[in-house]
Length: 368
Image 1: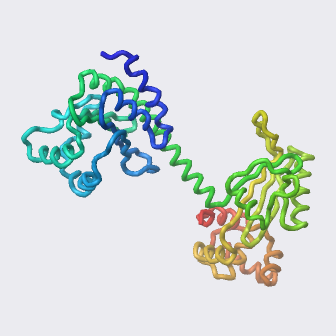
Image 2: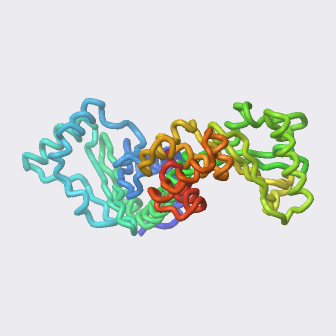
Image 3: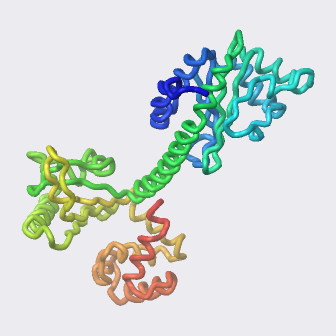
């Protein structure tokens, strides 16, 4: 048996190691020093695809580059150790893993272990509840591990299993967050927070990009959100004042640019501020389109099998224009625009403009 005091120094870096980059570096360093190893490693394959197929973490001197290349190129196919057959939580010595006199085992020892100075090894497999396997390896150049070294490694098993479980769950959430974040980025949504006077308080990366570009929105005098044109500036100021006068009123939408499209929705901020931080009165959600109208028309034509003239009208209608406004913008008569719209609705399976808007804005084009 081993006392808790004997492993107490290894538990904090084992628990905190999931949050390091790379993970568990401090734990492997301490573990190597604690048992007098020259090399310690963790190898596992997480189920979440946010990481490479295999994660190899180590402390100490790795195998020489030529030996690593030999293992990757061919020797891994002749690896005689049944890693998945090892009993969960049991520590194995080298003579339990390799059979003396067996040609394949001797080749593995001669071509990998000896050149890597792994003359004595302790290996333990841990299975995390979701099915992820991790192998903790310790090796020495000279001398042999003590019986208490094996006992200490075995005592770490339940804690390593718990730490790995947390890491796997964290990796899955990171992957989901990265996919969600990528989708939001592709849809080019961003946000800015403003105080009651329209001064900018904070912004995300997309909002910052729009401000840094400065051709539509910018940080004006006194840190106020300002626009490129006086007319647009007045429209934003009016919307900010309206929300300030009626915090429970409706959100205000502003079209900032039509080609490429950029709009903004101003809504009251109802979250409590962090103590010491300025109070946000308004959240300004910005939504842009990285494609020109010509590009979007081509994409609409491809997706819904529209003619170029139909795609141009569909795009205008999807951006909130009425038939009359779209006809005027595209140089069509209202009657021609109505005829085109009926054809567009039929091709898209839409019953009218609300369906058209919904079909387009819920399509994969928003991720293009």
